[in-house]
Image (tube, rainbow, N blue to C red; front, side):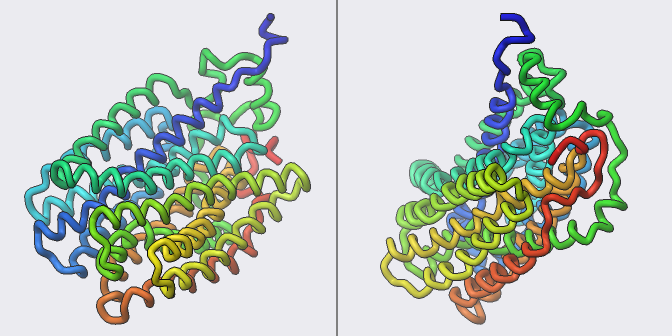
Length: 429
């Protein structure tokens, strides 16, 4: 068949698969920290308040370097930028396994956070020139499902490796995985479809019809437009609420199961994985439901809002119920439903940055994710003190309250109103 009649290739789905993998690897390393910390705490003998401060070294670096990471991705292009940051954090993940003192541990965690800060904004930017608008909800849901799948398997994997070896071994192993992925990404990915030899005319025309011909490769980033946008600040504030809430589970949930519920290391890994498995389902469903609503109604604002608001409210209801139940499996189910609700939000939030940001999706998502990770940094540091003075239930009630606030804020977000129309975004509906 000639190039004009051949069925369109689907190289964009391979790109999506690689992005799903980097989300998975990012969270392998991120969840490794929280699950290894009880063993590290035991070795170093520091109290729970210090444990929170140690975790916040990663969280603050991750928050502070979101915007520089997004800028780096928009400036250099996702091919170079994403490979670079994965190599960076993989090296420092390896060095964390060699940490022999508390200061060295804190420095390594900070530098891992510096590298991982760029991962999601750059990965999001990498999809902006490949995925069609009608595929973005599912694409974002699938990528974040990859991160939550890592959250699900990591507790069991880390507990097993620590049981067989020491807490150092997972850091060495996961560092090698990151370096292998970076090599594959740099070899296969291209910043625009027209540069990839495996993309035929059919797929290229399909992408151009939906997204336009593409903007100039190195455009100045319109920071004034981005930072003066009221919608951008509402989106960022909403994501602060989400970031605080989900990081309670990513950072503190294993410790909660161990300290409050009295679970052993193996039980902690099992029930943490059981609860976080619901996140994978929530990520996929959030994007799927949103795209289905767009397909049937054409109402992108309603689609993103309805799914996300429902998700926040589900979290607000079921997270307190998890605190009050006693049976281990019922507790896991209640918390799991809460996490499911929160994860209905995340794919839609990142899809909004693509919807409104276009060629500057990396920078827009970096601003949003900065606030999400300020929430993550605050929950990492503050929860130790909340637990010390008020107990574990109070820490989860704060999460429920912020979930309600997140739902209210999402009522003011319009995914159909573009931040900066240009040649690259003018064709996106």
